[in-house]
Image (cartoon, rainbow, N blue to C red; front, side):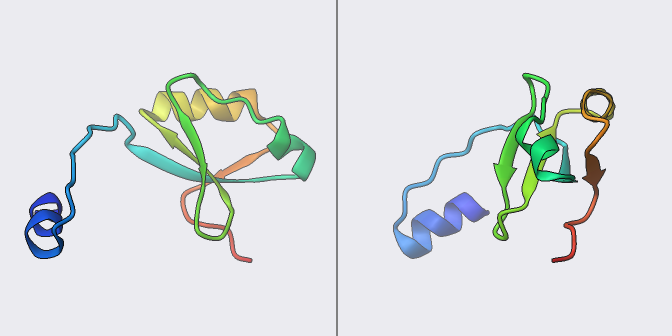
Length: 82
């Protein structure tokens, strides 16, 4: 639906690309711990519109693995309050 509307209503060419991520977690912690975050190679780190760190995971197992590798960080289901 989104691709069709972009093309038909706005004349914007759009492509669809599958992404394997099923879980998003906002990451909080001290700046030095955030700077040293280690994530699985199958995960992706990005910033949201408020410059908060978000990590995308393929599975609960990868989330647990990442959490275990980064014990000084918290992985939140909802964005942290400013």
